[in-house]
Image 1 (spheres, rainbow, N blue to C red):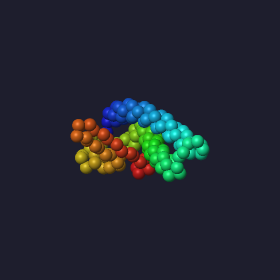
Image 2 (spheres, helix red, strand yellow):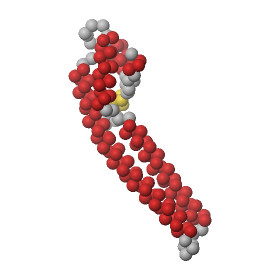
Image 3 (spheres, helix red, strand yellow):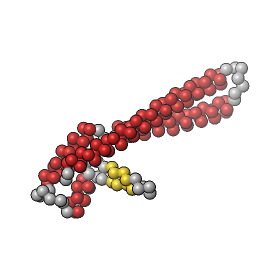
Image 4 (cartoon, rainbow, N blue to C red):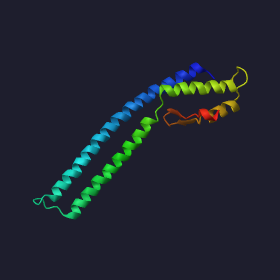
Length: 150
């Protein structure tokens, strides 16, 4: 109901999300280096296996290759997860959409009054709001809104 508080809260969230974005990008770079290292390790293993001077059995080769491929698969999954998280972080454009959404909600409410708890609940349901409170008291709020639902 209060556009200034909405903007202030969203901008605070953007600051937190930017910190998360920096951490995610750093982690993604680390995973990319790790994947490159594993690819090189697999290549070196194959070169050793085909070298006639190195006495490596086929079983040893396949075991080591399977280990490397498993690690590569885990790294790729982590990278994909981080990419999804990076694309789902809110932007300033989302703030504008949220403000439009909030204006429509305010317009639907009759009068210029503080809405009843039932009405607030309906708005939170439209926002698909979820609040998590951790044991250490940290509060995380997430949600999404659908302009077409209005």
